[in-house]
Amino acid sequence: MTRFYDPGGEEHGIPTYPKRLAPEGLATRRQLRARGLRPAGQDVAAQILWHGRRDPRTRTRPVRVAYLYRVELARPVRPMTPGRWRAVHAMMRARRTCPDCQATYDFVLPTSLGCCPGCADDPVASAA
Image (tube, rainbow, N blue to C red; front, side, top):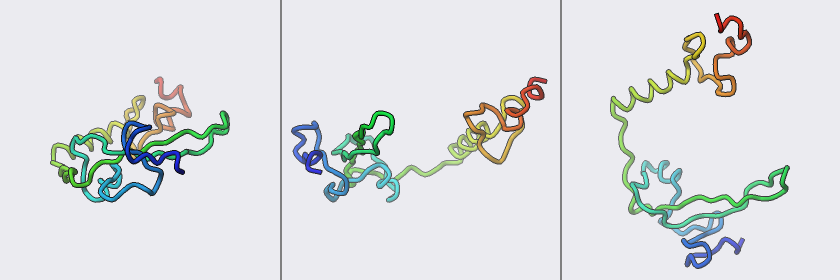
């Protein structure tokens, strides 16, 4: 636990804290977003380090990191404009359209297949 406690930043270059020990006034991107804020281009103020889950193949525990930003320098999230909504809908429509049969589905197509499940099951029909 004390391995990652470096509030002066001598060892890691920036102030570093273990999980749940970051001081008030600092927040991760997700915590800022939950408050309706964004980092707004500010530099990383500190970081949180912790050990991740053990990899069963290598039997090592990777060191995970979460960057912290100053809450007082954060700005409100930009509102979605009609143009941004159109762009999001077009992007999602492309993810739901099969490149082989051109059918649009109500779900995002799996990237592992590269096409809809029907075309993946019957490659002869999709080639026609």
